[in-house]
Image 1: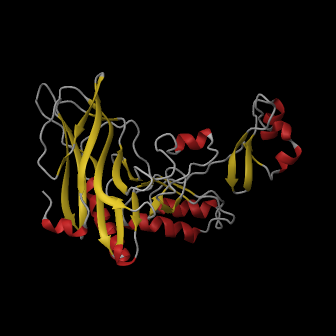
Image 2: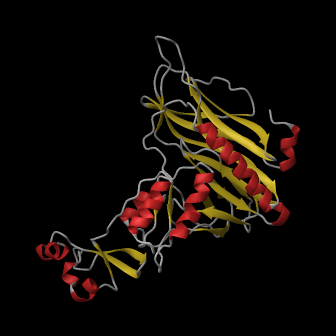
Length: 364
């Protein structure tokens, strides 16, 4: 059970559930919070260990399969005792949803973009999370409050699945509650061996840290514990099967000016110090020093540089749009197919119809 010191920080995990599928049957198992795990039919056990570290609360969610069949995890979440006024502003980290990364009032909620292209929908979380008033979600970390009443909640380990923090107001005037979700759908736990009787080590679905205090002290405490947790995660771990391993990338976003090499170093160096590997860094613009110098700088970090082109993209400000609209793809009504609104260059973006012989010759 949590120590008395934990209650000083006012944060606690009070309940949780894990949804799973075994064969053709689906089920739900309750999470044992702060207590020794108790096997639950049909042999899937879930528990959340609590400890006080770096002046805050660390909560780690585990599951263990003791059945003779593989188990697929569908979802996992924890409910906390954090309740906020609907008028409170919380930080929404929208890097994965490409929605917004800013302080958002819970009552107003996150607004889904009016137009989302098929490409963005496939890469974002538009089909996974509800948008609208009274709902705010943040990936990997969030914070709220100010001064000495600053609160921070962040994920310590996302090698198995990404973590999402949800603030939801059940009614117009009721308080908003904070829940923690593991984006672990598709994770498959191996079965108990019928020959040796050996069982895989528990699988860690989520590992989060909640702390309250001064802003600098909270962020520093998280950074220290995050570095420790990352080193722990690099040791021997059970080989659970994932539908798709999580990936971490940094996107410079649309930029009007070429990307400076010094800016790239400012991005990469903190990740290197924290020993957090980036799967991809997207610059979006040509570097000032040229590709050769930039690629050499990227190789120094141990990463593999690469370049991508967008030959089928046609901005509205382009010469092709002004002079060769017949190259642009059209819908069944003869309207130009618009795929979104870009940032560099700004304005509407269309797509070229490479099935047209004249357009193919233009591209060649």
